[in-house]
Image 1 (cartoon, helix red, strand yellow):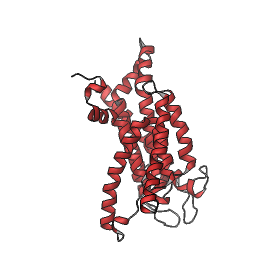
Image 2: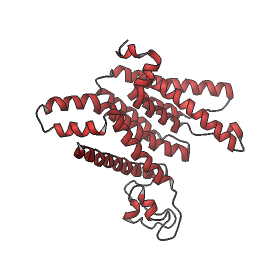
Image 3: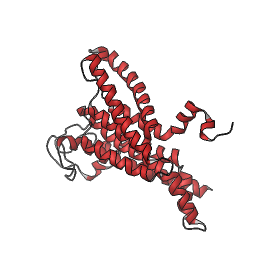
Image 4: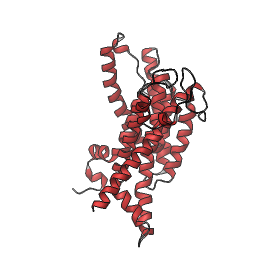
Length: 293
């Protein structure tokens, strides 16, 4: 049992590192994509164009190895990269723990080579993979879009529109969700938020949200269906209201302070994808989920 515990910790560390490495890539993409910089170009200092040494590219720790500055010109690097890498690593591990559990995941892979492995593999494939893949897709795409939205106030079509297609492909392999539900989710996500935006503009005479938010919610609907869209919007609105109130208190513009909505949509989508049984149970009761009376 002790050997298994050690293995679980090792696997958890590996999952965390993989998530952090993906976070590093996403952070670089968020910086380069809106600026039309090639993703294949080696990392460079934005001030002097000096190449970042390999030890500076190590997720999370690279920032500290470089002491937060360029080794050539001394230009300071933002610590948000290290924070984002840590966040992606931690949330990747959390997604695995919620949908599978590292110990169960390790046992599944271990038993693949034993008796009855075909049955175990079938259970692993259909029970865990699609929900986990859905949450990871929402995590990574949402993280990328959030970074871009925070800096540029845009959610690029080059991500959201292909994202709708990717979401539909993921749902096509989900035995627990009908493909028509995904199509309805796209329609409700895109059309519903567009209607809200149109009404807001009619009443206030200005845009309350951009079309990027509309396309992003359609992307969310492709994997979470129309119920997921509604919960995502509800959670995002709640979180956004709190953040907007806080920002208004510390800003000279007061409650008129504009904040990007994309990060809150990303948070709402991820929370619902990880804990949708909780929300459905809270709304309909355990009997609707086949629970005991």
